[in-house]
Length: 132
Image (cartoon, rainbow, N blue to C red; front, side, top):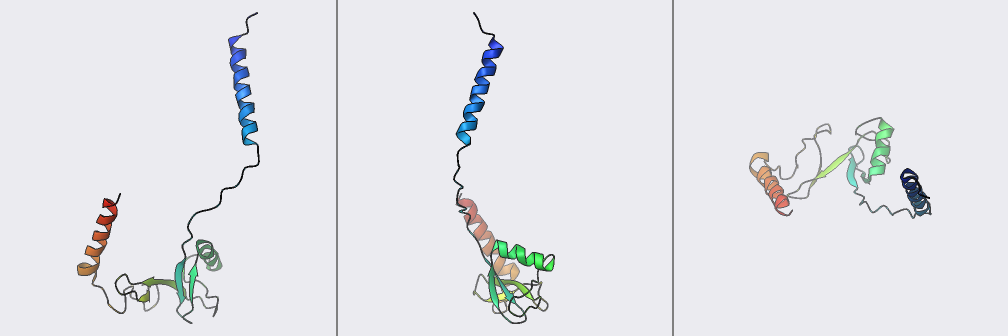
């Protein structure tokens, strides 16, 4: 008695599906989240309180104000919590241009954008490309 080839193929596919189902149905261990968490510095322009916001905290602050910064400061409750930048050349902290009265440049060394910053940025880009 010969079996129909279509029946044999169907039985093999069914057996494979059952095997795959049972292999995957066990309690799988959830992998730990090894994504590095990066905190971004913010500072209140009203009370000078510094905070570092993780990604989750950043999105929670965005929901508080229905959009973009400035966020609400947890210390003084004023909506003046802005991103804090650090100068690459002298490590001075300063506000960006989005803060009223802010220039977006380091108040200590005022690096000239044309002569000093552009070559340094291009050199970093070149080193990064060559490192791959």
